Length: 178
Image (cartoon, rainbow, N blue to C red; front, side, top):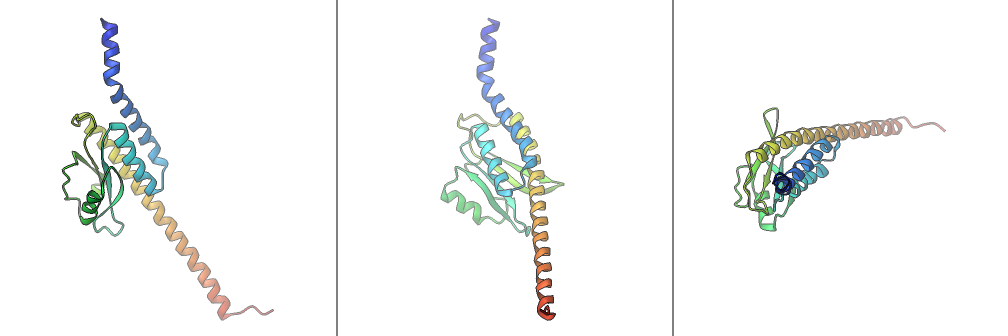
């Protein structure tokens, strides 16, 4: 009897363990990804695939701080996308969204991960919400890091362009004598 119970427990909990393992692997991998587009797509695809969810989308705060933009999505049709893009804040409502997890960093809202329904029809449990919250906090940190690295790269490129321009201007004003 114990052997049968053990087999049944493993059978019914295998999906739960598989999605938890996939999310754990993802949380370890995101610390090294500095490409914001890749990070966003990976977040949405990992969560929707691991948890068996039909739709998922990630809104990230725009660089100018005015509103949010759709960073990645899975399963959204054109009507859904139009509704996401027409919103200037995250106070929208989708009938297809069953859970939205804020991505926060130092009390600032970085973005929102919204998820549709599970293929199984099962509701999200408290443990699911806790795991998603932990993952969202890690994703917020990774997104912040990726944005900072991109800003540094842009600043470095602008500085290099300024040095080149200054060198060209100097040569125009003071041509080399041959």
